[in-house]
Length: 116
Image 1 (cartoon, helix red, strand yellow):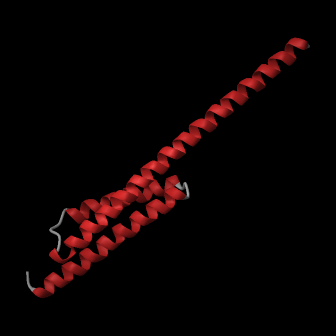
Image 2: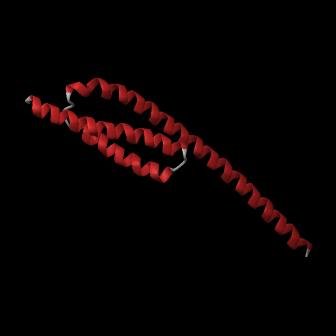
Image 3: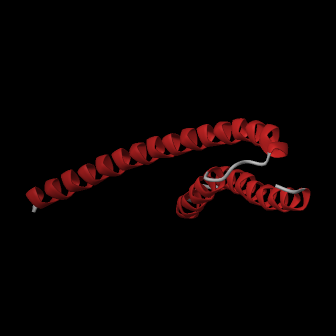
């Protein structure tokens, strides 16, 4: 590969990688905002970008930066998983409260009917 082709490949791969890194940061932001639908959509897009990115030979000058960023992305993804789990737990607790409230209301209504 001549130097001109190398420069073009470098720029293309750098842009693609920057997009992946930006998407990863945005995924974490969306998780903090509990914007799950946007997060899922972006997650799918980012995964496709990752597959495309790693289906090519990486330009040598990007290897160290990509390795460093991958560690950050893994940490962000772990935090997203923890946020999703926390949200699931909160929703489960809310559902239990609503079910208890529904039972109390039904019990009350049944007691009122028996009085009549």
